[in-house]
Amino acid sequence: MSDVPTGPAVKTNSWIKRLLPLILLAGAAALVLSQGWHKYLSLEEIARNHDALTSLIDANLILALLAYAATYIVVVALSLPGGAALTMSGGILFGWSVGGPVTIIAATIGATILFLIAKTALGEPLAARAGPWLSKLREGFKENALNYLLFLRLVPAFPFWLVNLAPALLGVNLRTYVLGTFFGIMPGTMAYSFLGSGLGSVIEAQKKSYADCLAAQAGGSAEECGFTIDTSALVTTELLLAFAALGVVALVPVLIKKFGKSKSAGSDSD
Image 1 (cartoon, rainbow, N blue to C red):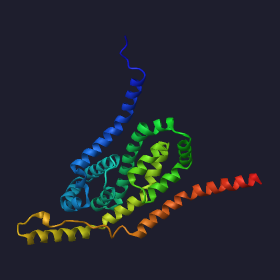
Image 2 (cartoon, rainbow, N blue to C red):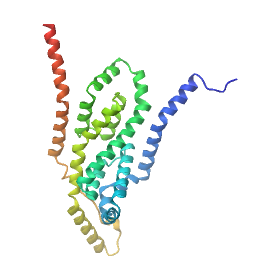
Image 3 (cartoon, helix red, strand yellow):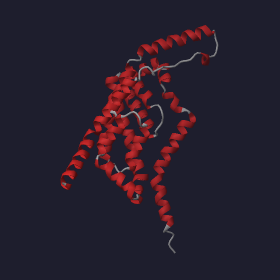
Image 4 (spheres, rainbow, N blue to C red):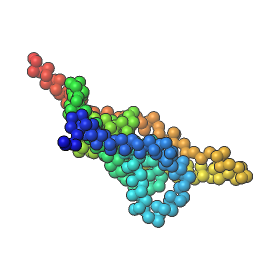
């Protein structure tokens, strides 16, 4: 008698193999969040350890860039919070002209890893079982996938992790996804990296204030002296509107195509 599983058992094993990478990603993200390890990547922690990190970078720039890129890839692949702060940190540590491009490449790699895993685990099975409404939505999205993806990347109204996952479920191919991600995140990434590169004076002022507070405490607890980097004034309404305007521009070709089709259909009916 054969011990080879058949029927429902085969389908179950197939689903487990398909979902396992996604489950591992989710488990790794849950572990990082539960342990609070992501908090070490905050602007406050980077600023607090700015001198030590700068010394390490000066000693070995290439290794430091690789470590930063690897960290960013993991953060994006696991959909951890704090991407904007980490992008600013790249600007603080490496300058916007170096930190920005490295961040773009690393973020694209991390997003692509998540996309491929989600597409394999959920996208392809979803396509096979999609009803008429979902199939129509997928086809409509795929027809103008690059423009739609650029719009989603540029407009700051959509969470980064959601834009990483949605194309996998909507049938976007790998080449379009990589191009849309790389060019779509470029303006925002360079802007945040540039903002980060200008935080040097803010960090120095905060470090002095923190040191003065500790001295005034005369041996008191460090927790009583706050160490915060406020970037709320940097991310202005004008900046967000500029990103939104770029997103609208990305949709212009889609609108022109749809208008052309409507006009052609109207002419044919005449």
